[in-house]
Image (cartoon, rainbow, N blue to C red; front, side, top):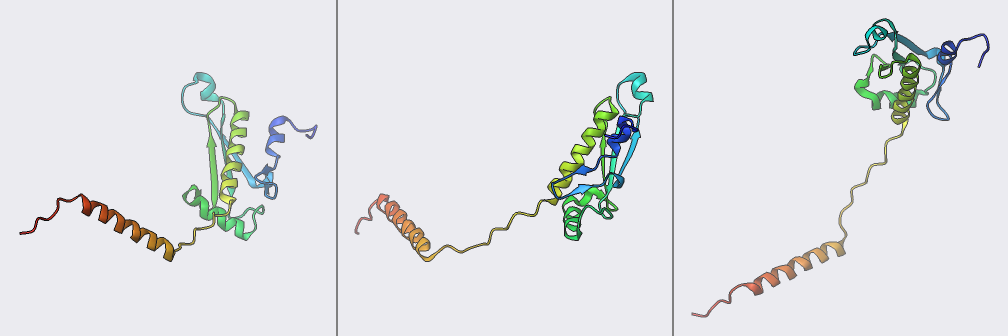
Length: 154
């Protein structure tokens, strides 16, 4: 931690670690602060505690092209004009809201980077399975036929 910086400046200079291979430089993260709504009286009305964290996914240097397209595809409507935005105003502390925003963005990006699960290749039942099914149907039919009232000769 640099000695010449206060803790807020130091926090904003921290890179965002998404995975071991993907680290988003602090310069690409954009912060904005505003007063949080809801109860809180004078503190809520004058303190800019709500944190908004933005990342331009389309222009970031942290992703290579396949990762970028996967993230944009997986996030879909969460990304507006290539920008992912996270807003947190749960805590009365700006510091805590910043931490929550960073954690949420990292989690969202981590999930979006995960490759899709392999799809099941459809298969047909084998010949022996078809024969077993038909034999079971014949046996069930015979059992029910034997339960019927016998046909009396005329």
